[in-house]
Image (cartoon, rainbow, N blue to C red; front, side, top):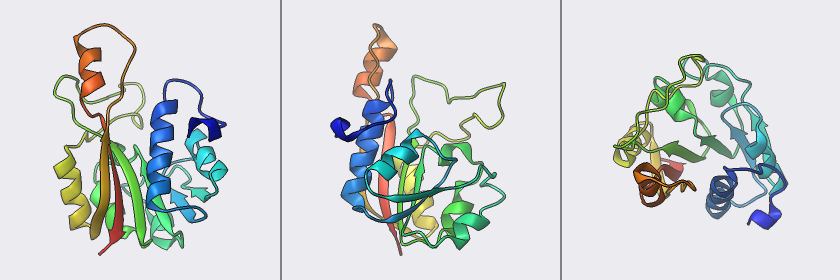
Amino acid sequence: MSGNSVTNPGPHRARFDRTLAFLQSSVAPPAKILDLGIDNPFSQDMRHAGYEVENTIGQDLDDDFEQVAQSDADIITAFEIFEHLVAPYNVLKAIKAPHLVATVPLKLWFVDAYWNEEDPWDRHYHEFEDRQFDMVLEKAGWTIQHKEKWTFPVKKIGFRPLLRNITPRYYAVYCTRV
């Protein structure tokens, strides 16, 4: 997989490759995607893999999900987006596309939720338990077809790094509309 990757070098490469493999196993290219979040290196990875990708324009998706509701995309993707929303249910309910592929960070008992005091957009209002995210998806009208959990290993020594090697950090879902 990483042999096909041309962007995103660095510490997140393994997670990006895993996410792309999950997307490809869920909905094969070519397909039209609306990716929630501004254009980013992973958007380029999806394009390189053969998907037609449009991104949202940076609007606050808690208040403005018109672009999402009016999209004619085959798939909505949301990779580490829903934890930044106060009310992810609203945008999940507004999606008209028949497919959703999303990842969220899982709540870890040994680490506080991410919170950047300097930047109000760079905060996690939620770090989900998998069953909690499942409930929100189902309530918004989605049926989970496939799901996976991933660890995020770090190359450091210590108790927390050891836990990161064995404790799932990310949760990926592929859903279809009920």
